Structure formats: C-alpha cells, structure tokens
Amino acid sequence: MVATNNLKTPQGQASFEISAYLQARQRLCDVALEGAIPIVYPEKIYEAMRYSLLAGGKRLRPILCLATCEMAGGTIEMAMPTACALEMIHTMSLIHDDLPAMDNDDYRRGQLTNHKVYGENIAILAGDGLLAHAFEFVATNTQNVPAERLVQVIAQLAKAVGAAGLVGGQVLDLDSEGKPDISLETLNFIHIHKTAALLEASVVSGGILAGVKDSDRQRLSRYAQNIGLAFQIIDDILDITATQEELGKTAGKDQKAQKATYPSLWGLEESRRQAQQLVEAAVAELTPFGEGSIPLAAIANFIISRTH
Ligand code: GRG
Image (spheres, rainbow, N blue to C red):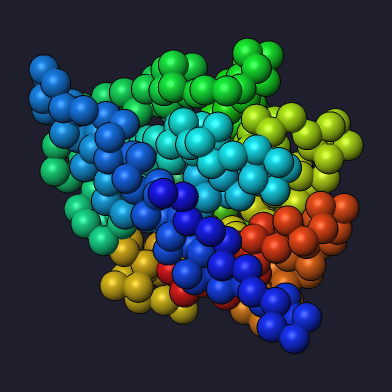
C-alpha cells in the first residue's frame, strides 16, 4: 500500500508533515531494497552488498526520485526500480569513499564500514557489485515506462557516476586534502560533482520517468543543483557541530584532514545563510508545478534543518 502525502489544508492553509512523509517513504524504499538483492552463491559478496545497503540511511535520493515522478504525474511503482538503483549507487560511493585509499573511515551509518567487516578486497567488490546491479535492476524491473524514457534514465545515472559526476568530484576532493586554501570555485566544483550530481540524477530521473517536458527538466536540474550544494554546506557544518553518534560516522574529519570546507571559507553563520538562500532558489524553481511540488519544497527545507 502506497503512503499518502499527508497533505492537510486547515483553514485554507497548506501544511505538510515532512517527518511523517519522509518516514513513510523511507519505509517503502527499505522494503523494496530488502527484496532487491537476494543472497545466492557465493554468499559472501551478496552479504557484503546487503550489509551496507540495508544499514539505514535517510534514503534521500530514492525519496527525491519518487517525489519528483509523482509531482510530474507519474507513480511510485514506475519510479521504484530507479529509486532503488540510486540508493545502490549511493551506497557504492559510500563504501568506496570509506576505503583506506580514499577517506579511510571506520564508521558509516552507525556501524563499522564495509572494509572493516569484510576486508578491503571484498568491500571494493561489494561496491562494484552494487553499481552493476543498479543498472541491471532499473533495466529489468521498470514497468509501464516507454523504453526511450528508460534509456534516458540509464544515461542520466551513468553520467552522474562517472568522471563527469561522482568520480570527477572525488578526484579533486582527494587532490584538495591538506590544502585548506583552495578557491571557492574548486570547492563548488568538488561538491557539484561529488554530492549534487547524484541528487540531480535522482530528481531528473523521476521527471524523465513521468515524461516531463524539456523546460521542466531544466527547472528540476536547477532545483536539484541548489539543494545539492545546500546539502553539502550543511554536511560540512554538521562535521563540525554534530557528534559521531548523531552522524553515524566519524565527526570532525574535515579539520583533521585539513580540508577546505564552506565553514572554513565563510564561517558557520554565513554558511547557514548561503544554504538558506540556495534552498529558497531551489523552491522558486518549483512554482510552475503548483501544489504538487509541496513535498519537494518540504524536502529542500528539511535538508537545511537536518541534524544528521
Ligand atoms: C567507484 C564509480 C565509483 C565512484 C565512487 C568514492 C566516490 C567515487 C565518490 C564519493 C562520493 C561521496 C561519498 C560523496 C559524499 C556525498 C554525501 C554527502 C554523502 C552522505 O549522504 P547522506 O547524508 O547519507 O544522504 P545517508 O547515509 O543518510 O544515505
């Protein structure tokens, strides 16, 4: 049974229960993900893939995909395979990001990182397995979507992962370690690619599945790029202000790695102000979608009020 949007309009005033909405959507995604990777021989690799995929997480990327598809007139059923694929890709990037050769972290999503439990070799393969499975899953499980839209979605996901997206952002991020004085331009490049690209793919793929026209697709891209940068600014702030228990991963890592961050460039208060401005710009892109855009607007606001 698909959860409703919890839209309420008391005395003509629109209100929207974002935490109930996110919880319900998170549950839907968790159920779909639970069934997406059965354990078969050789069990070890499937267990490693499931260990990180099913460890929780906000499920923000799949939720964005579902919400955009619905807003644009599609259904949750049309978008769920893509939503699951986005979470598989995201989880792959977390596993690889945590490896000793990358960010070298021991904790993620409140538990030991994949390589700490399964070893580096299996963790690399678990990421590779998740990445490949994501594309197979979209291609073989999507129903009631014209093939040409599906091809566009697959292209969108691939672009977000490759050198024009996550990989490119990660390369510059690695280069910037120990260089606290990199420019705002470089910092933006890193996060537009490392963080915003997959959020953009999440939103735009939801729109493509529902068949949005080109001008709306561009609006969706701008909405997502803005929330992507706002998301990263808040991530940088939380790395300073939140505890390991709240984050589920090691806190205070940026300072230790002498990384330039938005707070290191602007300070905490200005960083919060910039994030707020980006969210306002994002929400402005949703105007033509009318009341149907309430969930996406609420998600944008959630991104800057989040505590983990
Ligand atoms: C190997 C093809 C390939 C790509 C990987 C390692 C890498 C290249 C990129 C790193 C991408 C990365 C880890 C970006 C950080 C994005 C980010 C802010 C993650 C935290 O996301 P949340 O807060 O986490 O949504 P949860 O756990 O809630 O899902």
